[in-house]
Length: 471
Image (tube, rainbow, N blue to C red; front, side, top):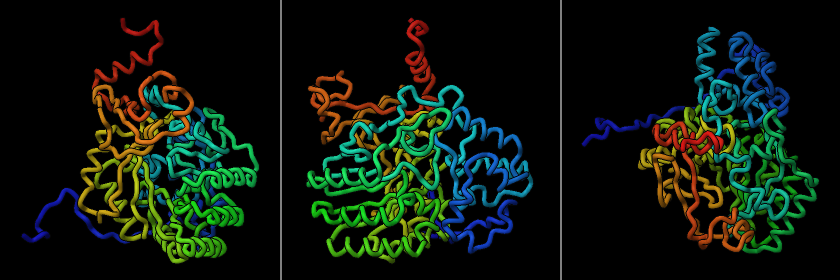
């Protein structure tokens, strides 16, 4: 049979990456390519509020859009606004230059949906799930030193900084990362960076069972390079550490940072040391839609590989209206894998944080998507869709042990213990269960607005004040 004549659910067509023309936006008409490629120019011209967005887009966006954006910042946003020009330029790249049409395209744009939420995006009845928590994964509860989360038996997460070069609306660390918003007074790191790093290294020296360190934040692009290099060199001095993963969404949102000669030279020194010690050094980034994968992103990823980083991998987040179709996911994965040398790795279900219900997808949708993308990409480059279950950790979406579709509650088990299990005799963080923690079933929740009517009614009753509940 001729495969050219077989109609497939998804049709692969190789597509060259393109850098949208930033000069289409009134505020950037005179910006040169040299300026655009300059990391300091990018940082200095980040958009932090509706007024600055107006300076860039001007009359292309209607007054109503700016009002909706300001209202969301004042009433709902859990993250402050911060968009580098690189990221903003990937929003509505082909929109007509007529204000009403441009605004409609801008509003509908998938990158805009998670980088610049507006009031109309939020669900009017269920902006947050009743079970949402600010630190939904309880990372701070598992700190063994400030910013060092020991959640898995052989792995830790080291948060070196609480800022990023861009802020995503759905940030799972909204409790810690970024400046406070009218709705969220952020938790603060209190130690000096040098003292925090000293405590982290001291713990790792005393805990040789930890072999894998994710160095994150915030975003490593906001750690001064000499400070980051010093920490990584000391990390490599620990013979117990065999994997180091550097987390930076800036490979996608601010690739100019990772293209700076002094950063690449420093990373080359670290990569050479890692190679001599047979340590796997990789960079993890965060792209959620094919539009954000541009030639500059590919150039940055290639540069990281050229200086000796073993791999550049992507960890995206599955979000409604952004990437929740097989076509969205496969287009993104083929751009990453085939054009940008970035390995598609994970897509997480959007976490149970406040204000995220309009982004979250139900588990059954994620299960369908995992099945739909199988067989198109190479096996090693086919991303796993995972649910990061509170008190459990990452689980493939098909690993739920039970699933009540009507109420949107799935149940999950775990195969290792964390510090949380040491807090109570029965191993339950809330003291409510008596079974072995490895036998306990932990719940995870679908967005309420995706449930059948009976399920929505049940949640309405659960979240109503006791006196108002149906008898």
